[in-house]
Amino acid sequence: MKLARWWLPLVLLLLWQGLSMAGVLPAYKLPSPWAVIQGFGELAVKGMPPGQLLHWHLAYSLLRVGTGFLAAAVIGVPLGLALGASPRLRTTVSPIIEVLRPVPPLAWIPIAILWFGIGLPSAGFIIFLGAFFPIVLNTTAGVLEVNPVLVEAVRTLGAKRGDVVKKVLLPGALPSIFVGLRIGLGIGWMTLVAAEFTGVRSGYGLGYMIMTARDIQRPDEIIAGMAVIGLVGLGIDILLRLAQRRLVPWRGEASP
Amino acid sequence: MSLELQGLVKNFPAQGGGAEVPVLDGLAATVERGRLVSLIGPSGCGKTTLLRIIAGLEQADQGRVLLEGGAITGPSAKVGMVFQQYALLPWRTCLGNVELGLEMAGQGAAMRRERARGYLDAFGLGEFAGRYPHQLSGGMQQRVAIARTLILGPQVVLMDEPFGSLDSQTRNALQEFLLQVWSGQGDTIVFVTHNVDEAVFLSDEVLVLSARPARVLERFSITEPRPRDRTSEASNAIRREILGVLSSQREM
Image (cartoon, each protein chain N blue to C red):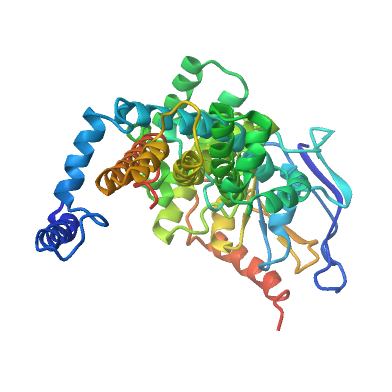
């Protein structure tokens, strides 16, 4: 880790701590970093609400995101490939996607609850919507960016239509597919926490945990919860980037 | 008699309300089996379009292409093509690229790998089998691309200015390389170039095409035995004649 990346965050944290200790920042609105760390400890050990521990909140949130994201990837990547490969399909299907895409996933919550009730299916559905569109669009864009000469070259080597998709379009679009997966997972993660604010049946979830902390005026635990969301999101993205580097070895580096 | 081009007509669709652009206007030619025939002509005359029609990548509006008497209706491994931009799959190693055609033909992994290795060795690329295309020079990439095409044993190999983006040293080396790997294969090569020296050095026959729409203006047979001396009297004479025909086509 390079010093250049870390000195500014460290300075800001120290400044924040100093201002808190000097009494400039009111603790009931913005507790000090140290208080947040203690709040984190309490979330992990005592739980919020008491007895419902942080790692279970995290596990439930990850389960919801995982479900929705997997569904989005399993449907979105093949659909994106098909849209990229077939101009006719693009003309037919694109208008539907363009109309649905601008609807924020959270705006689907009422209808999702009506359809699926409160629980994993509706949460998964909301995440699915958040992740689906970036995955489809980036996959399609990736296919369209594949050099047409490569397609012609494999056709003169005896490729059938399926070969073209499997051996050229899919690997050629892979870097772009990864961009879509990373954006989709990021949006899914953000969507999830907001969705959990509106209520969960199980009593678990990071968003639910934070809202409970707000109800009983614990800003330290609110901020600790936010930090967990941020760090876990970062961790997931790093994992995907590692997978990208393994699966796309012909590009020297992962795209930003 | 191997490859017959019969009355090929091709028009490109009009752009912006203008008239259709005729690219080929009844082009006819016969290429005998086992010969290396160059197509040379002014740039934009439709050489590449002609090659793409022979490859089955494009359809002629009229006329047909016969290979050993059978009409070509779409791309297949019988007619191989080598592109100017090499067109290697960047996510496959050299070995992976060379075995691609065998893989699509359903050959087992062990067997096709062994054959591909044999080709790479014969092409002087053995030690680069595990490299990705972007790690190789342009000349080496094009040798991989030629191996990838020849390993399938095509009846005709189409080459679209294959050495056009190489420096002249590498270009000369690859011309010699091509003759070396081609001799004894017995397949036909149709070679598009705009470089008269290259055509004269390589070919059994040179077809000079007219400006668009392309017709065969003249047909030169080159009987000088190989390996040829690029600066010999005979080479110079035939170059002079070809250049003469070409300059009559220059648009002023």
